Image 1 (cartoon, one colour):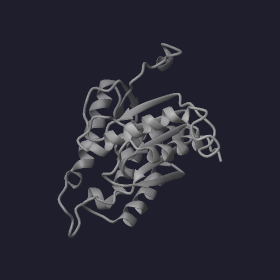
Image 2 (cartoon, one colour):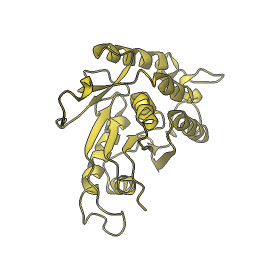
Image 3 (cartoon, rainbow, N blue to C red):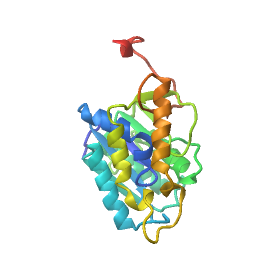
Length: 236
């Protein structure tokens, strides 16, 4: 079954996508584009919260961004490796939704799962375009127009920025949906996430915004050149 979308965002864990590009997703959903989020794991090894709680939070976060469909491949947390079965599962998702753009975590991050998520999806994007790969089982071949990388814990010079001034509130609301991760509660383990992490992300997006004369922006990287059809398009 093919269910076309414009933007397919992958994360290693529920909350990765929101941290890196929640504002961009909300921006384009508000403009009528279809976005789908795919989490590779259930984050079952997280220090705080349970799998069931995290899934409820992920569903609520997606709702706050306006995303109607979110799926989880239930691959093992801290067990993301470039293996054929994982590649096939991700390939099937890409062929099912046939996105124009795919987004993954930036390959350099303090959490190894984030970089491995990027590597797995890169492999699957390539395989998805091969006609005879998984023929008759994984769906028809599909070539993604581009793969872009969003930042989670990283703070580096982005290759391009997207103004999210109008949707920063949606992004922050989606992050606050993850109470088990970002709030200190009775019995919580102290982690970087529940020590002003949301405030740090907000400051990062404010700093990015200043680089382009906006209140807030999200930064992205690419491994391939960006094709501009109109050099003055953003000035109109």
